Image (cartoon, rainbow, N blue to C red):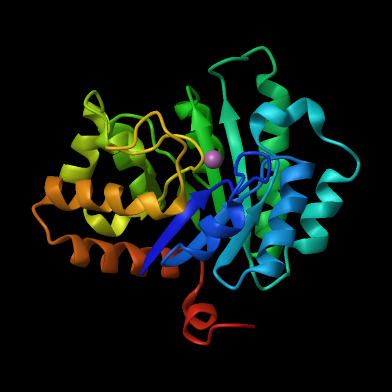
Length: 255
Ligand code: NI
């Protein structure tokens, strides 16, 4: 059994979404990033037993926030299949002149997560220090998904008790930082993810990703850490279950 802790299961990305979900040997946490995809996530978690979700507004969507955006999140956050708020965060890669707006949106959603005591899934790109400053006092569990910073920065986030999402990038030849992080830090600190439909791991790099491919990420972690792949998967599943309070949900199945 695999748990893909972060993927985007969008209708307009997959012709065979139903088949992809049904053929996954395990569970997926589908992530929204704007009103439209948040509504899709709500639909998916209600339809499929093995799909859980997080909903939130991504920093690149900061100009698309509507009066409905926060209502959609708050109205659905207590759905037992909804595991947290995400993906939320900061992204200064393409646009930096709206930093204040991004920070404001990020903080507002952290407040919602704290009010409902739900974990957050954070997207952070080219914004390590601001992300750290905002999150250092956060009162809920945090997953820095698709972790892209240095080993030193990884240590800082791990010290706060956060987990780091590790995906297909680990299998790429040029991913030095991530390999160093996986090698040096304890496996307790990691969450397995694909970020589907993006970032397919080797040997599927360049093709459309899907949640089952998180196996190849686990295999790479096993290779780097000199562990058995099944032990790695079991350990990462335990991390995911703990991170997102999935104990009772998975053990008892349908809710
Ligand atoms: Ni994502």
